[in-house]
Image 1 (cartoon, rainbow, N blue to C red):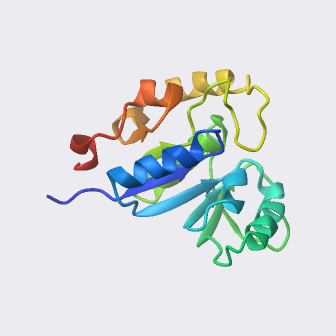
Image 2 (cartoon, rainbow, N blue to C red):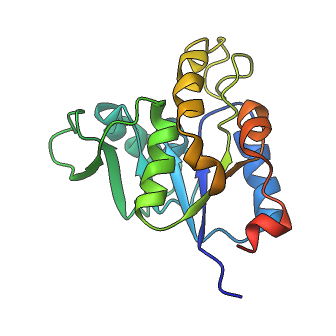
Length: 175
């Protein structure tokens, strides 16, 4: 059986490190996608995605300070965002569903199905780097629900996205 490559998309929720560890016990990711802050805190990153590209140089600096010297292969943002000077960003149309949804669409564009780690889209336990509630996720959920087509090729390790998209079981991982 020829399975589609599977990307592990890593967000910034409080559950991200636990989700990454659990996902890697289920499957070997074909690629690792990092969203926003997590760029600085995980060693292996193939693709970086953000709706906040101007913050990327700071995250990249912290990444190097943390001893991670290999940079991502590429950087992605939405077409309507302004990348920082000195960095080449690839772009796709703005999905309006936050950086997590943008990452899902970049992964699709690159030919991957995706497993979300640290993207539960919940108000509580919102970010590992900031413990304030993240009420904005409720607005993004509406956009996610309008993108019903992602339910075929995206699964999640935790939270609302796990409930809505499903868990990456063996049967789904084999397709």
